[in-house]
Image (cartoon, rainbow, N blue to C red; front, side, top):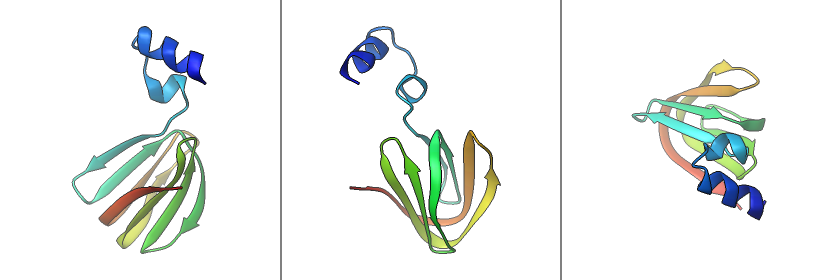
Length: 87
C-alpha cells in the first residue's frame, strides 16, 4: 500500500477513496456518518462496532440508533459519547 499512498498524496487525491479508508463525519454529539465501511460487527443502544479498512471503529453512547444504512454509508444517531478505533 506504500506506493498507492505515495501516489495519492503526490496527486492530492482523496485518501478515503484511493486507499478505501473510512470517512467519518460528526454533527455535534448527535449524529455520525461513516462512509467506506465493511460491515456492522455489533449493534446496540450503547455500543456500535463497525469494521473498516483502518480497523474496528467503536461508537459508544446512549440511545444509539441506525438511522440510515446503504452499501456506501451509514448514519448513527443518539448521544455519542466516544468514538475510537480498536486494535
